[in-house]
Length: 242
Ligand SMILES: C[S@@+](CC[C@H](N)C(=O)[O-])C[C@H]1O[C@@H](n2cnc3c(N)ncnc32)[C@H](O)[C@@H]1O
Image (cartoon, rainbow, N blue to C red):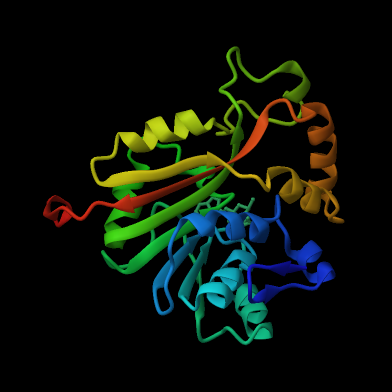
């Protein structure tokens, strides 16, 4: 499967390594709205098996710090070696509240299908992400979300699949959360066009989580879910120097 101008994955490789809706397809669309230039330093937060990191390194010539909690960085290193990208993608084991990086280390932080696990916390963005990015740098996040907030809790037909503490929210909700930050300017908050195709790619995978999600998506029937992209810029004002 081809993505962007410079990235292709064997279908078997992709299916073995997807962890949710096709993150490469999502990265391809999300990053069209966020300008990355060769040589930039990018944190791929919650990179999972690192497919989006491979895409970012290949497509934009950036150096990627591929940070994840659940996936062993040694496994990611082997994957990056397969693509001869071990010099340009650094795999790291990290928890999103204890990121082991110096202030202003990055030109951009990218996060796909991960931010909803921790980024829903009110002060998360300003406390843990903004300090890591140079002034004028970019934040580009995509999360699974909702077309509209549930008005009276999780609908009965989705209750077998979604926990009460799942942080799926609408574009409007994410925009309101990020708007509270004095440190950033939101450039885009939008529904990704690839939502349906990214899910279809995932549902074809021979993976127990994907099999369960087939049932969930049948129940959902296109009525509730969305894939949301948010792109913001860290403000240039001196006030964020600390
Ligand atoms: C559904 S997977 C998506 C992985 C990958 N971005 C993708 O789209 O295929 C969610 C990822 O978020 C990461 N994650 C969840 N909570 C995290 C946390 N507190 N700190 C760092 N990573 C976290 C997990 O390790 C996992 O790989």
